[in-house]
Length: 616
Image (cartoon, rainbow, N blue to C red; front, side, top):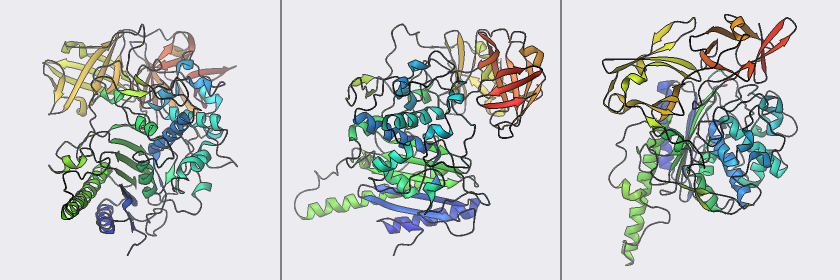
């Protein structure tokens, strides 16, 4: 007998999942969690544990969760359906669909739709301004709330379009606006009418109005959160329906052409750095292929993570196993939810393996032989399962692809051609050069949210990070790396490498270029030095930062700002030599970035960031 905390065709599995989740909730004091597994025949098992957070009633499997950046997979599906219909071409400029869209960067016409989906547009990252939607209009148009012309016209690119894939939320909000421009409808309404509705997923929505009829859980003692970054992270849904949405990428049920969904799962990221495999493994919307191998999901499996202030979510899809796994939980407990989802997936695979054995035995009994019995789409999934589940390390460590990957080239709307997504452009600069002299690692380097001071002593790399007030603090995580002749290493897997490209040195760890140092930095001019030591306070009371201070301009002409935001404690920037009242991003490859500009009115100076304004 099913209950409202367990569901699915394999109820015994659902009950085991529910017991597992309940045990975690009790130990970690998490408010609510829900997990779901879809197999070849539909929803296999779903279960939840905990309470609804804002109240003490028990969480149910049909409650709503914010799935954060898993929302990117929904906008990717919408774009690919329109590609199939010939209404969008992946390699056409975004300007074709949004002719009035402008950035404060002359390179913006080079940005294509594909670059939005594989994170290579060069757009800095995230517009944090007004990301919560307290009010809703009659129609939930994306641009109405978030990506206003006023905001976009302050944005400068951190890298040449198509040169490097760095995680970008704003690109997916822009992709949702492309969907709106092409269809003439609000993105979320069109998504529900054309994709999630026909797929039987009525809970998929955004905002308070589309949550009516459901209960949305929250962190304990908090009100449910609502976002307006529709393409990037605002989707709410039940977790079983999230897993069922993932199943569309295995069997699209005619809603979207299967080859178009298959294309989203091909690695298509771009990098000019040889060691930055995190960049090259971006798929269209998906974070990367699934490479952890804690469970054997076969070739072509992909993973997407999502996070908001209150939720952590994961979606894993394996076409070889015909399996879709989803989990979402509130953030008031320190739990490795991806590990939990993989454990659940391992149990589901074991169940499917037993069913497969029973099917083979049944075939044997009727004399047809078991040797030819293999379900469509199983691939090598169950062959791998026979040798046991999971004996790799627990970090998601995607490996760089070898050779070129094929990708959809839609030079004619709706057509599919094969093309290398990483072919060098005519006249492009050569690839980076690995640095083999350990002493060249020394010096100041800058990321989007910090300043690093590297020193090498007796073939050991030591690191300090700049703190508020100008002091340096030893960074234990980045200390004690020993030179092995090619890189600085610590332990079996942790290594820091450096590569030189176009006169800049990039530091790489875990496949991510996290900071860089340039050959030189432009003069800050005369305006910024006069403001050294000045602090600015938010003018409207709703700005991202309450306070921003220009603490100093260091010996390399880099402006050091400090903020009261935990993700941006120190923001290093350089001046734009073309405009004395603006700054530029210090790092091309980090996932996010900030640009400041000054506005002067008689005797008053404002510091501006996007559409936020701060008064001295």
